Structures are given as structure tokens and as C-alpha cells.
Amino acid sequence: MVNLREVNHSNWMACIELDVHDFQRPFVNPNIFSLAESYAHSDVNSAEAEKYYRCIPKAIYNDDELIGFTLIAYEKECDYDDTPAYEIYRLMIDKKYQQQGYGKEAVKQIIDYIKSFPYGKVEHIYACWHPENQASQKLCRAQGFEIVGKDDDGAIIGKLAI
Ligand SMILES: CC(C)(COP(=O)(O)OP(=O)(O)OC[C@H]1O[C@@H](n2cnc3c(N)ncnc32)[C@H](O)[C@@H]1OP(=O)(O)O)[C@@H](O)C(=O)NCCC(=O)NCCS
Image (cartoon, rainbow, N blue to C red; front, side, top):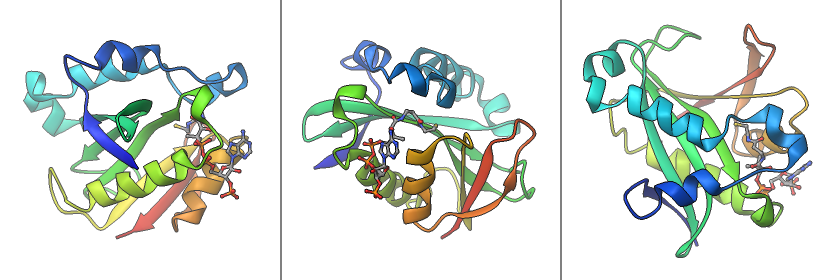
């Protein structure tokens, strides 16, 4: 069963080693980048995490096997509508575990986690994806995300009311 876990002493290096296919590199930053971003937007810098956005990195497991990584963010004033929101900043399933339904289960787990409102209550979740990223679009649309526009980089913005 797919489950989300903290990134910690035991798994942070394995998270960095997770990888995607070459054609997917334009779709997602490397996990090492996301973990560095998470450090800068954490309790280490809580004033800035409050002011800009707070990162919530999670390792994705199937049972006890590490299969992917996600970075969720909480923004007090989301760029898209100035209200508090969570956004799925990154999601990746390692190339050897893709197309087995894990991505779909991971998105469900992420939504359930966000609904626990770990940093504050919200009414919406956002996710953005590259216009050529068929898999992401399918995943998000299947969970009810509605397309509400494009960001400055041309990425499609999906919004889910919760
Ligand atoms: C997006 C991603 C997380 C999906 O993970 P996954 O485990 O392969 O997804 P699933 O097996 O649950 O498949 C979900 C849907 O996407 C489709 N899909 C998966 N890979 C696909 C691909 N390469 N091309 C087209 N469709 C694809 C599946 O067929 C399925 O569609 P269905 O519900 O109609 O059957 C994975 O492809 C990935 O890590 N990609 C690279 C990083 C990325 O693009 N992240 C998202 C942006 S931050």
C-alpha cells in the first residue's frame, strides 16, 4: 500500500537517488533541489517559511519500499488567488516503478494528508504541470483538479476544492 513518510536520517540519500526518465527531466526538478528548497523554507528559517511558503517534503513508499518523492507547500497567500492554499510543488515516481498505478495512489495520499491541514485550513489545493506532461494531467484530472489557467512559465494550473 502506498504511504507517505518523513524524509529523515534513514532515507534522505535514497530520496536523492530516485530518478525519472530522460524525457521527463523538463517536468520536475531533481529531488536534491527540492530538499535544498525544503531546508530554506522550514523551521530553520521559520519567518521566511511563514512569509513566502513552507515546504513539506515526503518520501513515497509502497509498503516499506521507497518508490518516489513529493514536495507539498503551504502558502498563507497563494500566488494564484491570495488565499491560503497547499500546492503540490513536486511529485515523482522512480522510473522503475512508473505506470503501475503508484502515482495515482500517491496523489490520493497527498490529498488526504493535506486534508489534515498540518499548517492551516484551506479551501483549495493547487498543482501545476508542463503542458506536455500527459501523465500529470491524467493524474490530477482524475482526482478532480480543474484547469484554471496557465502560470507565467506556461505551466497548466490545476485547482481542487476541498
Ligand atoms: C507523473 C508520474 C508521477 C506518474 O506516476 P505513475 O506511477 O507512472 O502513474 P500511474 O501509473 O498511477 O498512472 C496514472 C495515469 O497516467 C498515465 N501515464 C503514466 N505514465 C504515462 C506516460 N509516460 N505517458 C502518458 N500517460 C502516462 C497512466 O496510463 C495512468 O492513466 P489512466 O489513469 O488513464 O490509466 C510519473 O510519470 C513521474 O514521476 N513523472 C516524472 C515527474 C513528473 O512529471 N512529475 C509531475 C510534475 S511535478
